Image (cartoon, rainbow, N blue to C red):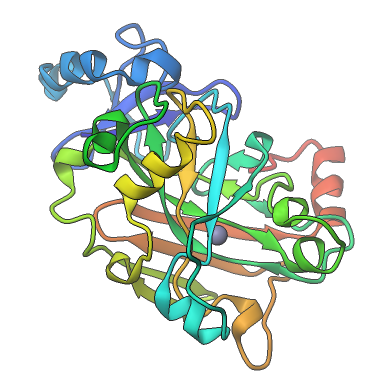
Length: 294
Ligand code: ZN
């Protein structure tokens, strides 16, 4: 299934995408794609419905982040062998783990706001895991049973905050709008091979990143199992799993996002995102003028 959340920011309702690509409403049948609703039983109940029996919504309906009420938004760093080689980093012996603030989560096509004064905001196309059941000390061979599904994530990053301001990477990873999730939360039965998913990212139509989950160092089951030894993973938690080569920081010359840029990205089977980049001052001016901000 391809699960979605639709409607105005902060007031999203649950839905799904039918076999013909139509957006169907699940209001009243599921409270939200959040927390306990992500349990296997709920997913099976919705799977048994005939999508044609559900209200069809206009295609222009805004999609919100495909999971709601996320309490832990965790990220894995340097998890692609070709990306590590590109920047001359050693293959990590254990996953590098950092936090993204849950308040940075945004819809897949919402605007990305550059932080105040930012000069080094960068992109990262990533596969993200959405947890469906409470996971603590699980083994890799059972880890997928704790996963509700996967989604596309742009792990936006302010490199100065991340790398030049001391301390951990977290400072550069959680600014508002730095975590677009979606368009869909895709259940695992729709993924033919977790280790063969093509991924790409363009800026203003020019290809920047091309990669595949084939070069992931720690795979989805290993990551869920590993993290579950350090924290309780709960339904609705999101783990974004690292990026392939050719982020802006790694290019020669370096290329960072600026006002007016358009970022598009996708992963095979998980859909596509499109974000317009807006400088902080332009965004505050739009807010002051009462214009829509996403
Ligand atoms: Zn990342």
